[in-house]
Length: 162
Image 1: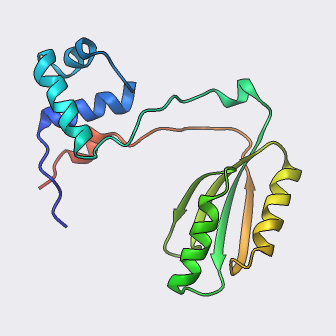
Image 2: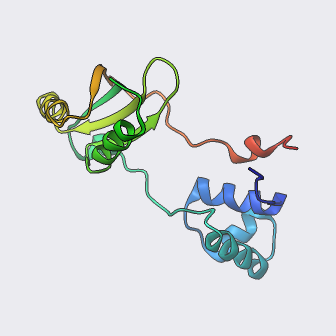
């Protein structure tokens, strides 16, 4: 699949928005070294083209509420399309699941889950096991502290692309 053509200025705009979120026209233009009007026009084009999915705030959740974070790896019994679709549809409806990625290799999915307690996590897992999602096995890892959370460095990812 051919990747769309973005120039260095587009990448700088996307990188600034990824790092700082919503910015004033003046501040964004300053960060990307472009005058405000063309900068804003490019930002509008990037939004309209679907390069920006949304804006959000990163909260210091641990300062707001006590919670338990768990990483869970899941392997399904069978690897049929319908089994993956059923599992993924179920996961979409669980607010506790904050991230879920499909993986190749030993496990089919890796999920990050946030609940108010370990008991609430266990209850959620029991419900999943009862939901006929064809879970063969799962492994649970309790998060003891966050070491690093970041987004990919866009400018490094696109450097040296052909």
